[in-house]
Structure formats: structure tokens, C-alpha cells
Amino acid sequence: MKKINIAIDGFSSSGKSTIAKGLAKKIGYIYIDSGAMYRAVSLFAIRNGWISDSAIDEKALESQVPDICISFKTNAQGQQETYLNSENVEKEIRNLKVADGASRVSTIGFVRRELVRQQQAMGKEKGVVMDGRDIGTVVFPDAELKIYVNASPEIRAKRRFDELTAKGENVSYADVLANVKERDERDTTRSESPLRKAVDAVELDNSRMGMDEQLQWAFDLFYKATAT
Ligand code: DC
Image (cartoon, rainbow, N blue to C red; front, side, top):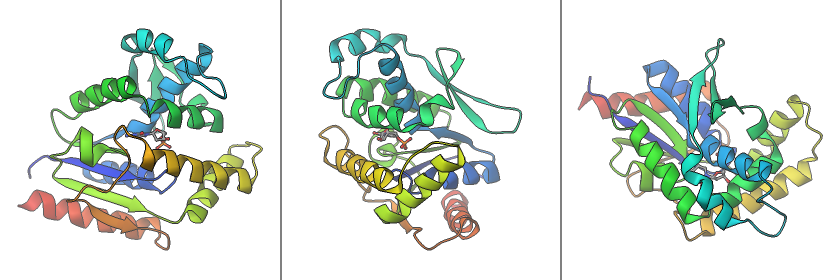
């Protein structure tokens, strides 16, 4: 069976990472969460005091970008965790402040160029399932299988709200919905690699689909893509 790369793009909280993780596990591929990489850059900038409510100190960030090393390791439970310069930051990058910063740093050209370079290197040997916003359009334009995941903002906000409250974060549904909409707007209107469906991507609206159904759907596509 030939080895391929699989690109899974979509809005925040569309469930793309759950599908990507599940599919990678099922087929024995490496899963890469490209959003975690933008979150790690955001955390790095926040810790250095380079992100304020109104601006980002791009000059300072640009000078340090080559020193930001992001990697992934699998923990004892088989879950992938994100490392920033050898420190496990998996938990810290999942809060709303870091997510907001990630949405903002991801609009900066030099940040995108560096992360795309790292992502392309990770997929060089194929056998990768990567999820994000520009995987099918920019990172792996030649990916043999591209999936574009979608669901309504309200359903995605409910998913994110449940996720955050389960982790003990004190947030309101209204705030999460506003954040989802704000990020959608930024993701689709930014000039650098805006989120859009690649022409050869297959769309999945999972608003009313369970995880098993989605996984089977993705697996069938994988099977078709590798059988030829
Ligand atoms: O998927 P996520 O919510 O963890 O992504 C965090 C932010 O990074 C999100 O605002 C969009 C951005 N992002 C991006 O611009 N390109 C990617 N390939 C992945 C994420």
C-alpha cells in the first residue's frame, strides 16, 4: 500500500483534530497538530511580553523566531504533547488567551513561513496526517487526500465550551461563541494563507455526525486514495 500525506483543514473546533488523530491512529500514520505550533509561538510571545491587547512586537518576535523549536512527543497514554524548546507546554497552549494570540501571530508572514518550512520537513517521508488551516492549500498542496471539515459556529462554540469547562476553565458560552466568530473572521480574511477549501479537497459537514461515522468516512477515503 502506498504511503501518502493527508491534509485536514477547517475552522477552529470543527472537530478536525479529533478526526485527524483518530484516523492517524487507525492507519498507523504520524499525527501533526499544526495549530499547536502557532499556539506555541503565541505562548512564546506572551511570555516575553510581546503581545498586548492592541499590538504585537513583530520586530522582537522576528529576531527570535529561528530559536523557537517546536516538537511533539507521545506520552504514556499514547497522546501527543507539544514541546516548546524542550518544555512540555501542552496544557498551557490550550487556554483562550494563547488561542487568541495564536490567531494573531498566525497572520504574520514570517511566522507562517517558518512554521510551514518545519511542517513540510515533517511530511517529507509521507505517512503524515496534519490538520490546520492551510495544509491542503500551502503546506502539502500535493497531498493525495485533502479533507475540509465544517460545522456551524454555534455547534463549534458549544464543543469548545464543553471542552474548556471540563478542564475547569471559568468561561461563558457567549464569550466562547464570540471568540470562535472572531477567529473565523481572522482565519478567512487574513492576507497570509487565509483558510479556504482546496479545490481538490472533499468537504465534511459534521454538525450532525458522530465520531465513529466520521472516522469510517475518512477511512474509506484513505482506502480509496491508497488503493490506486
Ligand atoms: O487549530 P487551532 O485552534 O489550535 O489553531 C490555533 C490558531 O492557529 C488558529 O487561530 C488558526 C491558526 N492556524 C493557522 O493559521 N494555520 C494552521 N495551519 C493552523 C492553525
